[in-house]
Length: 156
Image (cartoon, rainbow, N blue to C red; front, side, top):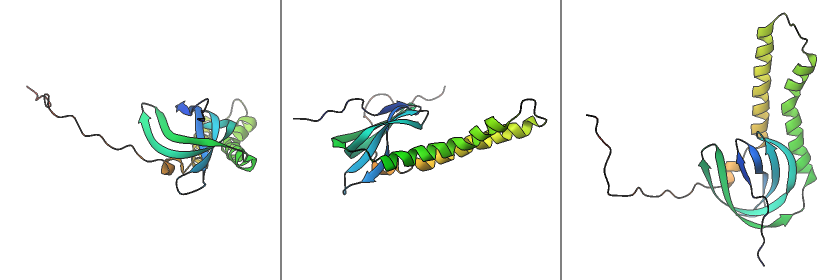
């Protein structure tokens, strides 16, 4: 009997289903949590999987992760709460700014600077929380260029 995965991981611009929070189980297998994400922000955990990573390929603005699905694992709620904590930490400065900012501020340049710094903070925290994903996968083998045909055209 073959195991089948419903809702395979696929995202465009961080919107979709992604595998996050990899934990090495053995030399070539990992346990990871499948998340519903919105603009790279983890929103809802969909379960934990045991996988054997394969290749990763970038197509346009999306990433395609190829892996062998080995089975389900019980969800580690401590790891889920850890990722939610990072998400809260990322949202904290922009939320505090939105709550404390008064309309008609005397210094709009300072407001813009604080918003930009808050967004950079959020991107940095989310990047830190999701780091290590690309080290798990390897790049696909390169294919040789086809031979024959016309070479590049020369300018007239």
